[in-house]
Length: 224
Image (cartoon, rainbow, N blue to C red; front, top):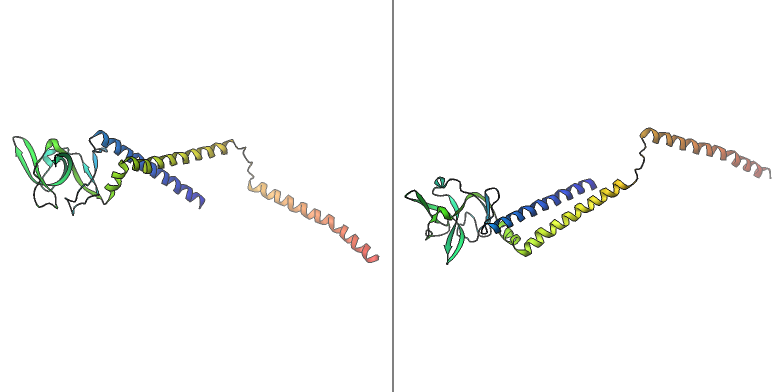
C-alpha cells in the first residue's frame, strides 16, 4: 500500500508539473503574439460572449488551428478573426455565412449563431487568426483566464512547481542518505536456517544441563 501511494504521489507531482509548464508556455506565447497563444499550430481561445450559443458559450475554451489554405475556407466554417467592436480591436469567433471574391482576394461575411444579423465588417485574409476545430471545453476558458493573471499564475503555477521541486529535493536527499549508510549484510535462507538450528540446539543443551541440578535439589529436600 505504501508503494502504491508513493507511485500515485509521483504521478500526481509530474502531472502538476506538466500542467504548469503547459500553462506557462501558453501565457508567454500569448504575451508575444497580441494575446493569441499558439502551440504547434493550435490556438486555445477563451469565448468572451454568448454570440455563438448554443455552439459554445461565454467562458468555454475552444481550440482553433492556423489556416494553411485560405481557399479551403467555405460557408458554415467557424473562424476566429480580428475585428473592430466599439472602436476597439478584438478577437471574434463567428460562422462564415458567405464568401466574397474580388480580383483574387477573399473576404468572409460572418455572423454569430445567436445573432439575428450579419457582422458589419467582413473578415479579410489579414484579419484571420484560425479556424475552429470543433473542440471545446465547457467553462475551462474562465480557468485559463484566471491562470493568466498574476494571482492565478502564482497560486496555481508557481506554488505547485515549488512544492514539486522541494519534493524531488527531499527524495534526492533520502537517496544520498541511503547510499552513505553502511550496507547491512544480507543472510541467505540457508544461513538463517543454520543459525536457527544452532540456537535451538543451544537452548536444548542449556535446558538439559539445568535439569539434573533441579533433580538433585528435589532429592535433598525429600531426605530432609
